[in-house]
Length: 273
Picture (cartoon, rainbow, N blue to C red):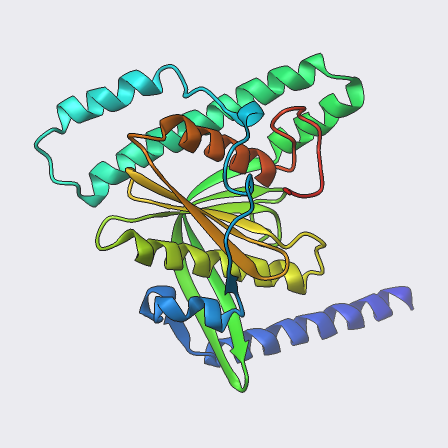
């Protein structure tokens, strides 16, 4: 009898899944790049505000020194590519080096802190570190409803950092959008679109902290973005030449908070204030 009930439940669930899949196949797909990007805030009910003092700026105690080998690698890049046009491959290679070296530094230093902390803090930090996943060229899809309109938004984000299960879009994450052509402002709006999708997904999953973080960069200018839980979004821009340490510090701070552990204590906390 019990097996019969379970079998019925399974068939019902399978039928529901097939019906939902069939319905979604009829939903038109729109690439995020085809949207009027300046309308992204309006589409997702986001309000632009100014950041608070340390929301997108590192405190003195949060300043992180750039990875030692980064100061030699990037000048070598400059020498080797001095006559190369700033195309997509060149920009990506610079961003790859910066993000990967900073993430590695964050993992190494926070792992060392956790080993010197009390056992409970150590286990929390270790769990957080093990749950950090950096993914490249991540495809994202989201069924978006506005009024009676229902469409599937799709796009590829250049880099994403996931905390928790890598395939669970409701987990904390950092979106990084590489900008190779045109003004950086367009990259900010594209990044905001991906962030808004995660923000909405987190709301639908009833996750208490729906804040999302992002970065748009052409490897020279770095714009840090945050969507607050209440739907307000803020930005702050830094120049690599003049603000190298601040950029590295903000990347470390952002990556650390995406993994839900404090950059200073390696202890887990609920949200970034």
